[in-house]
Image 1 (tube, rainbow, N blue to C red):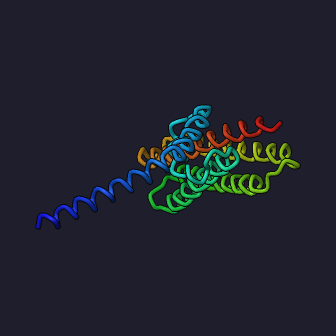
Image 2 (image 1 turned 90 degrees about the horizontal axis):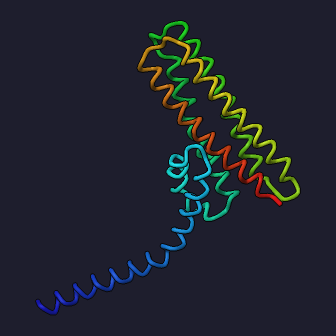
Image 3 (image 1 turned 45 degrees about the vertical axis):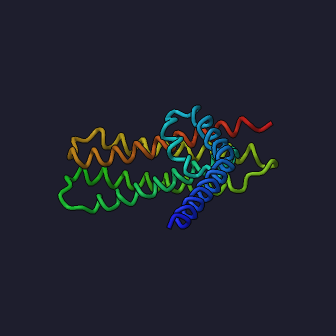
Length: 197
């Protein structure tokens, strides 16, 4: 029995050592990726949101500014699409006052525009090269700025209403998050635009 226990302990020790060695080898690589994201996000308006939304993609981003910017746009697009779908469902719900329904409909329209602008930006950035860098970055900056304006229009429309407290809170919370993600993406785009020699 004692020999069996010794073998089990030896196996556990060996497994622990191997696992620790693997983690030690991966650590600095992953740490440099997360440090790159943290440093890049420090120049955004909402650095904490920027970091938490991008760090899960650290292995993909590595330390590449273009991949960081593209990922920020993709995260923003996913949030905008989700919010747009939620708004479409809310717009169809019963019990909305006519002004609330109108504001909701307007919001769905401008969010749809915002989603299109973010898609165009992602498409453009995926074709980025040194020969078209300045034109592409200018287009992307314009479209993401327009998406941010659309999101602000939606928020403003609800701010002016004496809307149902719960609906107003839900809508505002979701739109504000999308706008903050968009603002962060725009800051990263602007940083990338100035990095070209």
